[in-house]
Amino acid sequence: MKKFIISLKTLFIASVFLLVLPSCNEWLDVEPQGELVQDRFWQKTSDVYGGLAATYDAMRGTSLNSIILGECRADLLRFSATNFSDYVLIAESNITPTNGATNWSQYYTAINLANTLMFYNKEVFEKDPTFTQEMLNGVDAEALFLRSLAYFYLVRLWKDVPLVLEPSISDTTNIYLPKSSEKTVIQQIINDLLVAKDLAYTTQFLGTPEFHGRANKYAIMALLADVYLWDEQYNLAMNYADSIIQTGMFELEESSNMFDVYYPGNSAREGIFEFQYNSNLDNQSNPIYNNLITTYGPTQVSLNGPIINMLFTQEDLRRFFGKQALWKYQGKDGLGQIGRTATEEDANWIVYRYAEILLIKAEAAIELGMFDVANTLLGEIALRAGTPYVFLNDKESLQDALLEERAREFILEGKRWFDILRAAKRDRFSNRQIIIDMILSGADVRLQAILRTKVFDTLAYYLPIHQNEINFNQNLEQNPYYD
Image (cartoon, rainbow, N blue to C red):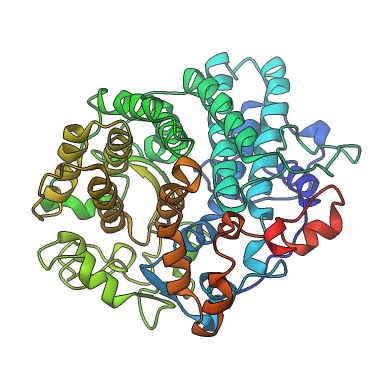
């Protein structure tokens, strides 16, 4: 895999990208055509939406990295060293600051595009009367969502990161920022999303792919619920999950139609937010199909057989009749019979769907001692997948059941490592043993003795800052575990 070795100086380069975009007629069908200078851009409504599409495209560009890093250190999947050697080293906890997969530039590119968009769209509002207040509010809400999502990945992967809230639009911009604490970044995310939810569209694009592919109020509330869960604010996590549930607009797909979530995607019942791909447009195939998962030939990811066999019963519909999790991206039906063709490599990157909202509420309910609520929700997810569910009466058993149900429901969707880390860090890492056992089981046997003495350091669960970033920005301090 090509290594991305790009420093924070890309923040300025990213803003220049916005200045060479034309207006776009198809959502996310953005192809730069010729040079545009700043005084000729940001003049009209179409310029703003071109910039918005570019911001979505930049965040969409993190999909492969986000999915793999959300899985590779966990226990369900194994990645091949043939094309994904950097991720294999991370999976083995053989991580160094020169590993190309520890580079965060893609996330900061998306952040700077969002910052730039929110800076210049105010100018367009003054210049173009067709760009209304409602449109300005909607764009700001979407930009805040995308910036918040990027930061949420950053803190879960690197913990303490630079907090960039202003666009890099000139060579006088200070791009040599130190790290901010995870707590500070999380609070900024929450503050931004609380603003965004009141600015956002609600049902304006209902019935179209844009309803699922653009951040509306429901997508923003889903991210808020997830962030509150991570921050151990369980009442608020439950409140925002309930805010989505109580709209009555979403429900689980029925068992017979469960695969509609993946193909064709944008489930009218279950989908909340997913980054869109369309193989009929240039450069619109999901990068997950570039060797990682293919519609033909060998793939570079496999399931950890012993754990999968213990986790899934034979009747579980999420096995897709033996085709297993890869079928989410390879198939067109839940029976494991009809595969995608080479021209259908455009499965969406699903960020939030209704099943996760129910499981966020269930997890919050467990931590709040509301065991009946948690059991009911876990049972709903299990029964939709065709598996029985037995009610549990103690907290530890419910916590284990919740993690197992999330593992079954979201395998290969880039969530497992974050689920385990969230469980481990709860109550000041009181449950760190769950992640210690997982790290040791995934590491090279030759390294286990060494790792056993190190994994009690909770900073080992986060990535190092790439060495190029440290060299470029003298104000950055390396994660002490990697010094």
